[in-house]
Length: 292
Image (tube, rainbow, N blue to C red; front, side, top):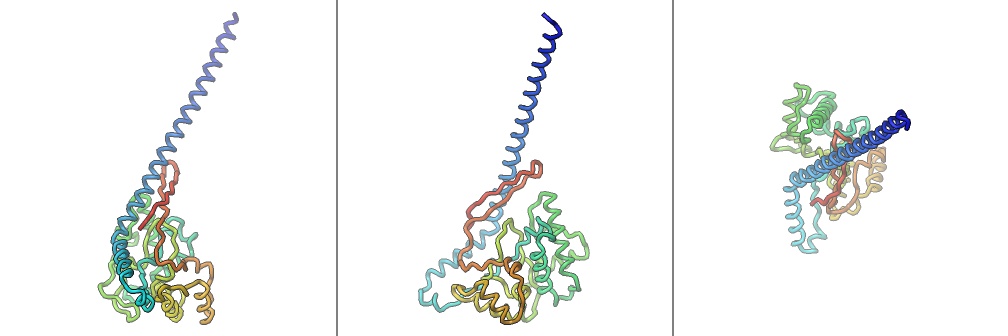
C-alpha cells in the first residue's frame, strides 16, 4: 500500500470534514445573530407600541367621554350642531423628517419652518431666520437621542446652540393664555408638532387655523374652517379646497397637499404600524397592532 496516497486521502477527508464543520459553524452563527436581531427589533417595536398606548391614554379617555356624550344627545340636536375642531389630532409629525433628513422631506421641513414663523414672528425673541435655526437644532438634538438610544422626546432635547436653549424652553412651555388672532401670549410648539413612529397624514378636518394660514392664507383658512365645523365635515374634500384656492387665485402644489388627509371619518385609524430596528444586525421589524 502506498503510504503517501493513504496520508493524502486522510488529509483530504480531514479538509472536507473541516470545511463542512466550518460552514455549519458560520451558518449556525448567522442564524443565531439573525434570530437575536429579530427578537431585539421585535422588542423595540413592541416598546414603541406600549409607549404610544401610554402617551395616548388620556386622550383616549377624553375621546370615549366625548363619544358617550354624543350618543346621549338626541338625533335632532346632532343634525343642528356643529363639530368641534380637535387640533390635537392634527399635529405635524416630525418623525420622518428626523429619520430621512430634511433633503428627503423638504415639504415637511418647509411646512414646519413656516409654521414656526407664523407662531412666533410676533415674539420679542424672533429674528429673521429663527425658524430654520431652531428647527435645525431640534433635528440635530433628535439625532443625538437616536445615537444614544434614548426615547425621542421634545421635553428632554438638548440643543447644540446654547443661545437657543432659553428660547426653546419658552416655546415648549408656552404661556397660560394664548390667542393667535388677538396676538396674546406665546403658544407651545407641542400643540402643533409631535414625534411619533408613523406615516399618518395630517387630518384636514382638525387642522389648526395657524397651520391653515401657514399653508394657505388667512382668507382660505377661514373658508376651510367653515367646512371643518360642519357635522360631519362631508364637504371638506381635496377638490373643494383646490376650488377655494383657485377662486382666491392661490396656486397650490397638489404634491404638497398630500401632506393632508381628507378622510371625513370621525374615528381615527384603529391600527398602526410600529417599527423596531437592531443596529448590530441591520434587522428591521414592523408590526401592525390595534390602537384606541
